[in-house]
Length: 281
Ligand code: 13P
Image: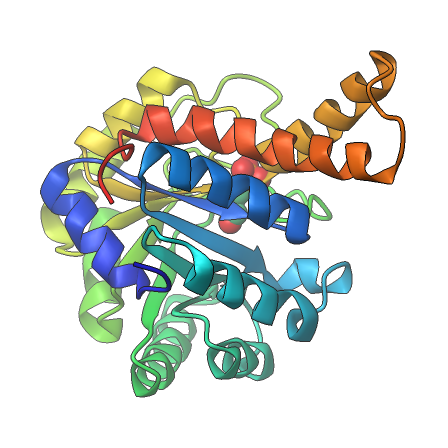
């Protein structure tokens, strides 16, 4: 199956009533761990990296690795540029072969967000790639450097945004936030349901880390078909390494590497099962 466009996965997910996990990765071990889970569960998946993370994982290094790993997979895997902020990096990701890009103009005034997102969508289409936009404002920030307040999506504005941008997928803000939640989030299912009744494309849930399994399932039943998971992957990798050391399982570098892969693998397995996408490839 190999590298596919993100839109193909999301259209199938909408038809089938499940969500595709979009897993943030920072190195080869995380890519290998996610793809091991994908192969084992026969699931579609998305590998993603956000623009703010390029300080640690340069796009020109990790980008080709992500694309090559997706091509090498026997399952359908899309490669997505998450929270794109600059035209330069969005173009670079498309040149590398990413099959999807997000433009995050959620902090901008509505008109500006719409206009810039429409431009990015037009660029993505030249590459045959998918485009995701965001309306409303998801809380926190992708790398934890800012504490952005949640600004819930207005369903009417979401429709207007979609009509003027024609994005393939739309990220909504329904009380979700990036990073570990200080308390269990109370998601606004009413906003999600209304938005999904107006906007015809698959909706995206950011800030997946820490959302309860039943809340994930409810979101999926109401129109979410892509779920972003970042912090949970990083935490799972770190915890896996810590436990392996504590249990005396690390005898050298390659044991360390294996425990990183395992941390990413176990986190992906857990989410794939909750999202209902196992066996859907
Ligand atoms: P978490 O770090 O909360 O999982 O959020 C991931 C995300 O939404 C990336 O765009």
